[in-house]
Length: 423
Image 1 (cartoon, rainbow, N blue to C red):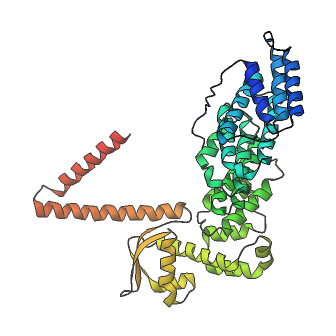
Image 2 (cartoon, helix red, strand yellow):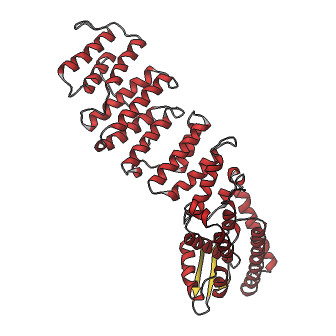
């Protein structure tokens, strides 16, 4: 929806004529005497007597005239969608030209207009999306007016169950937060708002990334920091699709919460398995209830993670069903089911063999990548190097392409050329 940062406004006539048109639009449907009174107030402000044209109007009188329009704008008005959008575009153009972008007055007027748009009938939601988008795009990228406009737009979409109409991504939010000239506290509040609307819209998985951004945005002095960190831990454990806990565990606020009652459970999901979870859950049923954590779902998740960790040690090899059953503490007859589940979760890739009762592991995700994982990777690379040397030897012997050393040097030289060109 936010495809441009400029909004074209094509308006004819003088300032006075344009303001009079705006006033006439705002008073549509009102009694004649009321409309006449508003029009007379406008003439008094700009100094029109009878049919005479006023002298050049100074900026104070221009502002007073526009305030009259703002005071009479009680809704989107009685007009077609095109008229509604045109009215607000012209109104925004005058508003943004008459007051500095950072002035308290323009902030007050924009806030008032946002309230008017929010309170308008819901059946006019589509035109309100366009009006708010136009206002967002009409304001400078760095403007402190943008956060409340964007917030109002998202609130409107959520209230109508139409959040998809206002698409946004983590990259968009990152860019906005870098551009907006607002305080760090306001940026944190905005991130918390994003988390809340996504949860409210039934998108807790999407909200999780923004939870991490929110926690990271809070300074050590914030009273909200620990509770936000604990909420993020609980969300990570609760979400069935969150398997990578390292980004969470690297946050300073989460590290600082190491003495919290939920932290040991996080540690289990980072580097332990089903037996450790079972022991912890048996002794901490109240903690599970307090943070709305379902034990059966946690057991499902830890088994998938344990499976992935086990498979990581068998990449390129056959993993016996018996070893899987032992690690997951499940019946051997259930191993194929768990194998299918872990593959569907994207944690492991491989091929099942009922004949050999094994899973040939092609790929597996490590829960963490530290010294142990680096050492395992080094062993695999060395094995790959040895295997490649054997292939080179076979090629040299069977095709008469020279000695194995010559071919190896040629390959090495080619690899060096690729590295240099990449650099």
